[in-house]
Length: 282
Image (cartoon, rainbow, N blue to C red; front, side):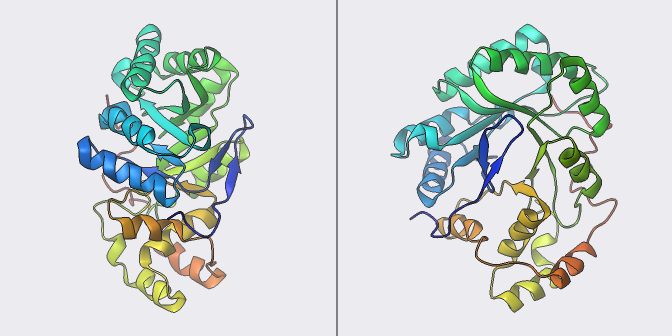
């Protein structure tokens, strides 16, 4: 059953809207992936995030086709990998994303990493602008872009991304990047919002907050994202966890709670040391 508490909407700089929380599909493939994604839609998720590099656009498309939820109520995202950043190659890859998913368009399409040493992200951004003109995608954005990368594509194209999806969790809250994005009208999404593969889900301070609110530790983290102004994209395969992750809009973290969580931040808080200034993914 869908979440009882309505999910707020975020209005982007191009006038489109996104739910304030989405569903991550990393590693959800094949029949099990279809089942998990389909159940997420039934549970109430309307923003679904995938990528070419996840190799699951087909599973996502199948889950959408199995769902009775009208297509125009869903917000489907995918991402262009760095190996396809040449202009013509990028356009072909976006077409292939549509063919694999059997969708007529994507609601959101993103550049996956800037890969600065290759120097192709400006060209790739121009391809996304073109894809939007052709109606293949509705909204365009980026992932893991630092201010210097964002400035270059905005200056070159005159088009500001609607979204910047970055690693963001209590151990690495990215306040400066969040502030930069907000100042330039860019909404921030959070990948790995629950700190994949680190110790966040066992943190004693977060456990204390959760106990005081009679909420789960995960709900506290996701609510923290919402109050921070970021759109979290948690992944969950179990039905119970999928429901829990949506139940974050009926309570609020106090200033004391936020101060406690702020003390968890670390300059070296990245989970896998994936600094976009040097890290590259193709």
